[in-house]
Length: 428
Ligand code: ACO
Image (cartoon, rainbow, N blue to C red; front, side, top):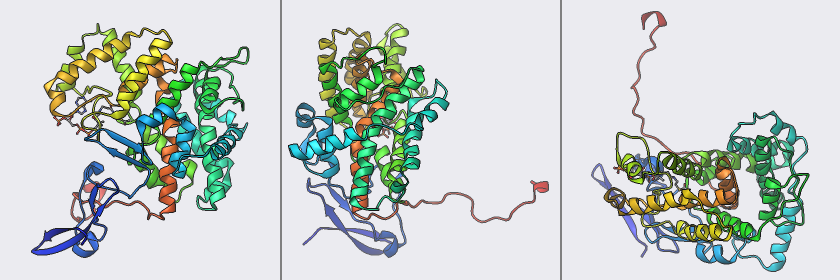
């Protein structure tokens, strides 16, 4: 007999089904709660709310487990390429060589953006934050591909939009940087892999080639894989909720990019480096900054510490910490920010405040240091995160559309004024 949950309200007992996932995660299905009882649940920040049933990513915050489609993140980060992982997330299986070649070729074929879009870039001020540019440019793609406005046109049309978006995001991202530098845009080259192409568009100049170091390509693949999906986080939930209105994929992903921008989410990697620089410039007294982070009258938080779901360790942080050491060693970089980061990590991990609240370094604590070593400018860090997260957003959107999920529309508990009469302006 399947399990049920009983809720007693106003002296009456109601039963609700318990849903069990493949990893034995349990939820009470309250989808009929309001209809049967008149009550809704209240869960600000959705800390206990399962918004969907999903077969894409499994994570266990207590045990520090992260799987994409059942494959452990450690194995994927070690053995796969980002494009292979993108295929896995979006289509649900590891591709055969033929499938991977076809997917990769299709993406390579669509990397150019319409020439008219260059004018949009030129209209932005040089100081424009690249995340603002990126989210606008991604939404603008919908104006060039009107057939994408109906997200459910056909599976082929859906795939074409997906491939276009995967192909064009690195071009738009690199061009947002080139534009900020007022450097000429570099066109993508079909001979390059996904990561090589991005580095080429970022750092080559018409006057000289940029030789992409395989150490850098390797590190970039790893970073993008680690960021590729993370189930129902803030930006992914945004994508699912915007997509649920049947907005087109470009508009939907543009919303996800905006959600990612905030310093409590993807913007944390930029905030980490800014924090480390601030500590460095202030004399490097790590204890002083840890004390500030603990002081409830001080709004300062240790950026890159804490996570909504990981309460023991973030498995991505473990992989990235090692990758960070490897990259710095291979590139022969001695970064004082890394020393500060390591001191900070040690002090915080031994501190009662951080221990009691299960606050550990998250993926963004180290990713910024690697991006810095790859010479990616600080303002581009969150853009890098967006490139990495794109396959996850797409996979979640695709799953949602295939499950015909209803439009996302939470309820609320109203705490405002009860009805009152309008008062004429002369009497207020
Ligand atoms: N520094 C100092 N104290 C912290 C920190 C931190 N980084 N993070 C949480 N706390 C404290 C809070 O003040 C709170 O203390 P209290 O119980 O005494 O009031 C307690 O720990 C719980 O924190 P919440 O904010 O309630 O935890 P929540 O799960 O809502 O937030 C979040 C998680 C947003 C990630 C938070 O830890 C944070 O702001 N971290 C810094 C920003 C960051 O690194 N974000 C990246 C997340 S990873 C990602 O998006 C890819």
